[in-house]
Length: 287
Image (cartoon, rainbow, N blue to C red; front, top):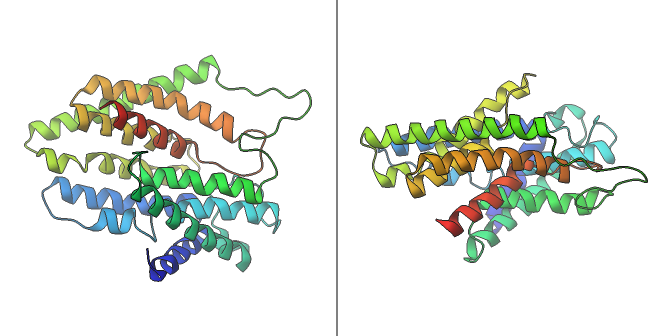
């Protein structure tokens, strides 16, 4: 990591804050989908590693910085309705300090990613884990609660209701199963093992781009914490049922992570990133 990479990380964090966390993530998804589709088709592509998950558009930079900057905009600049509003494009607030805070967190994302990539003991999804690092640090720096929020007298934390478990478990199972079956179809059509290594990124890109509907106000399911790990399980094992089980578990874990980290608090921590970092570590450990 050189000084130019740090400057690019700052620029990426500034971009993430200006465009907003989710809009920046959608753009990441475009590069991820296109680049991985080319790889699956047998074309040599450099987009995924250098652009989609690179030092500017990478979610550990642009997405995480945008979410962290929203905390500053809401809690300190007092120009945003909520510190957990990751849909807002912060450029429209007209506050340069908010965007500069995003730039600083972009640098934090770059440093975290570099350190994770250099170690070999905790093998997980480096961008997802780095998103967690940035947003955990943001809570400690700009937040006023503990990492899991702070309960007031008489408050109780709800972790998982029966209806939420059923709904999200079914969504996770069916998405995981569908992703695995599509992967099997690709293999049967002649896609080689090496090219299939890009399949998890391909479905991640689809899930990220689908958030454009969330940005438009539609209550669609968020799925990248399901599709990416489920596809990873399928690529490693070739077993559609293991992939479906991964999807089911992650669908439920997403709810739990949201209740633990985003209740009774004043910053945003991304539940999908938490689930991806944890599940990919476990998947690599098992398979």
